[in-house]
Image 1 (tube, one colour):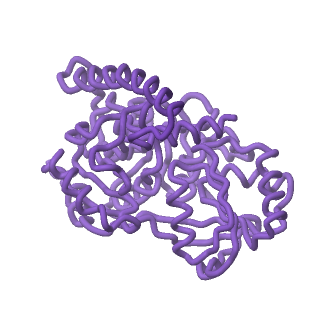
Image 2 (tube, rainbow, N blue to C red; image 1 turned 135 degrees about the horizontal axis):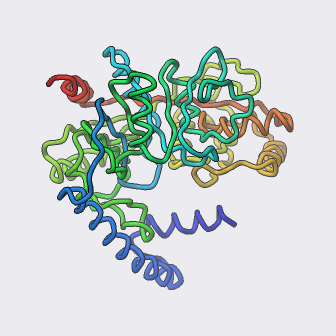
Length: 380
């Protein structure tokens, strides 16, 4: 039921003109709610812009990665890329995550050490309460603490005091204005219309396009899949903030891992293979397109809502579909495997191998401007 409602809302949210009378009535109701939401957003932003609401100051540099829409632009991959760049510059870096989808309360820190997830200094044998994104970032960024908590001003102080960090990277930080930042990076999906979408809940926009005036760097993501419209979109974004650096990026597949054995497979193993896909991410179409670019034959794609809490019944249904369709492999994302792996280990694998497709963000243009902007953070 939840997935059906999500799919119905997303269909309405991303269409400018309703196709049927029921759609039109639903969109009218959603539009009324969007007007109220937009007023609240505008009032809150004005309060911060004019200093009526104070921003917390930190003794370290703050780099924020965010977007204007709900999910699907590649924030996690961008946070990883930035953390690696800053670490290579000799900075002591921590990642601050809200931990959406996790059940742990309060502030906790994660680090991957010797093949184990360490939380607050202790190994976690059952990390079910830890959200998928911070857990994945901790696994990828060995030695970089990932600090989880809803109040990023508080988690930032943990990074400074407990870990001696001189730089924090905010994951999904654009709307978290409580914390003053030194570099604001906003990701825009290449498929965004030139005029944007409607605000929530009529559309998927958390803020209007005019909010880009706060950004220092704008990154058009998945630009390799929409080369025909990236130029026009870039011009539109430049008109909204001529001072911001404008970059384009792609999500490049980098690895294929057998989920149950941990053994790497060459990416060419997907060439010509009939596969089924399962995902619960913000941009399932992007995952589908990436898999097809590797010449896989996608028979079906079970796309759950973002951060879906997989249940044993979900895993059983996937295995039944693998068996019925006789696909040669089940392919999923690294983020999804964090939540699917405990079910697979507890209930057994499917009749086909489960492959985890790893991707990383690669800058296509403007990377020099990003590097220069990061370097300037430490010139005072």
